[in-house]
Length: 190
Length: 190
Image (cartoon, rainbow over all chains, first blue to last red; front, top):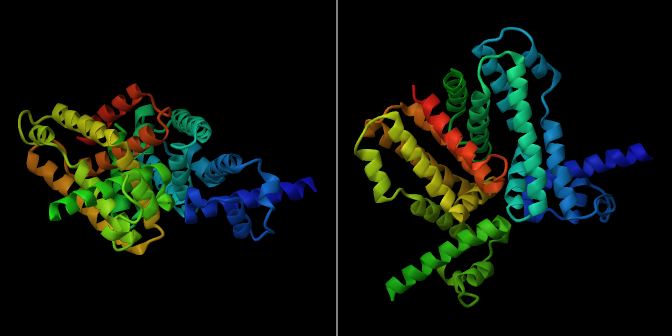
């Protein structure tokens, strides 16, 4: 029973991510989540204390689902320690995040909603700062070329590149996007 | 009378930008714009064909209000042609955009709304691509150091830096933000 509840809760949080991406933060209601998840109206309200709780859990779940897979972790930790390897990793990162389109769009919605909700802002700030710090530490431990500044500049440039790709996909062609990832790696790693 | 109408229209579009930033795209109704502008209910509906028209005009107006002032244009066109000058320009750019907080947040709302509205997406794509191209051309004509790739990488990195600053201002300290602008200029300009 407890396990069923956990699975149900995860399905509701995933449904909330889809609602956020499709309808925006203001469209996120318990009723919309129930409809998206295909469960009876009233279900979500049994699983979350309130809307803030649901928003916060959606943010956490997006990061969980964006965590690198085992193949990426091997690329990070094993093999050649050169700039080419960093480029391979950054291409994989951009593609992995772009592939979870609703998650990334939902995260942008949550950022905008955070400008109106101090509690959500505090939770997202902590989560994102921890993620940034983990990226920097992971890179420095990996022995790959590039310093902390390289990691931060890649974080900035690639995030906006993904925003362009997912919100206005015709601003840059796919070829331009690939070229910009390569150029970013080449220039920010001394 | 015609001039009054133009001023009234501009005031309504500016009110729409504030509503977008404060309430999100789904909160943008004619009624909310009337309330924000402090005009009688029903006014906005006389000035805009529909909600899409209002969204599109808000997008155009944000770019108009973000246009560099005369002092910035002089910095771009006159004086030393070195990397230090590029840094001065980029600092001014980041501060000018950050100062128009509601405009930048509204533009993010419009980008997310564009994922749901093909017409808005077409208008924004054209506008933003033209802006990117103008930035590249302006930089190359200025004789400042840096190639087209430098301009594009600065565009990417600084946009996300502004997203961080405006949506989750405690992820990076102001000191880190200044340091990242300097590092971006230093590294992307060969």
